[in-house]
Image 1 (cartoon, one colour):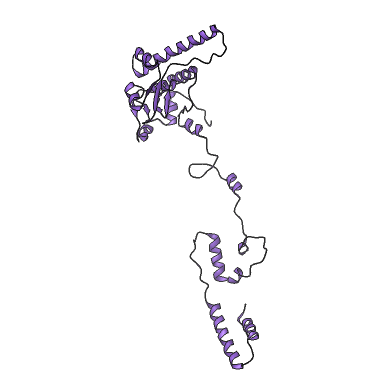
Image 2: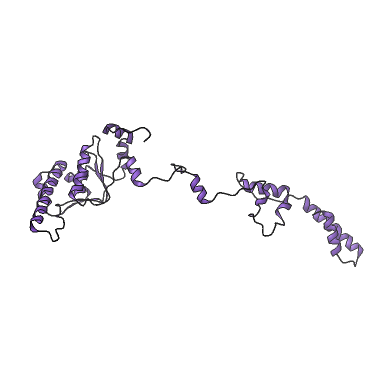
Length: 282
């Protein structure tokens, strides 16, 4: 919009009652518009690393008319047409497909918790060991390992879980301060409407499991079998302090988990000592 055009418009709108008054008004309007056109439009402080705002600031300083009289019902977002080749950001779904997971920037889907624990050679038993065969199977697997076994009791270690806690390497068995341990006799599975002879068979098997459990607990707690058998007649609960005195664990953890983790071998070293060979690229 030029100054001459403004003069014509303003002259047409001024009444013709006084010629001198008309001239004064025209001179004042021209002077005012001339000073405004020469003044630089102030721009706020912007982030210099933001290309969109930097481009808008440059256009506002050099060609402010491009930012006014915007087209109505335009199909493009506001002010995007000032760019030579405007590009829109990718949709969230496209971003999710284009990136992957690592520690700082995802490069693949995050691994599940069991995979992370397995990679660190950690086995977490978070479900009750319901059957004696399950507890003995885990115990036998522990005894086959050539490496040290660090056991940590969290929450509660009841029955066979207490045996597994005590079966760790001597000096490497730990409990959290408010963890409970408990030993008890094996339970007879539900007999239902079984014949009396079958009920007797199951009872004998429960007694055999009890005797085996007593021997193993006595071995790892360094208590006599008579002591273990007497305490197991009824559920025998132990807090962390009593479990340590009883020989189930060697230490109670309280803020020194980093010390324990520093004492654990790296996965590669653990596999080497255990005699495990891994295939290349597997």
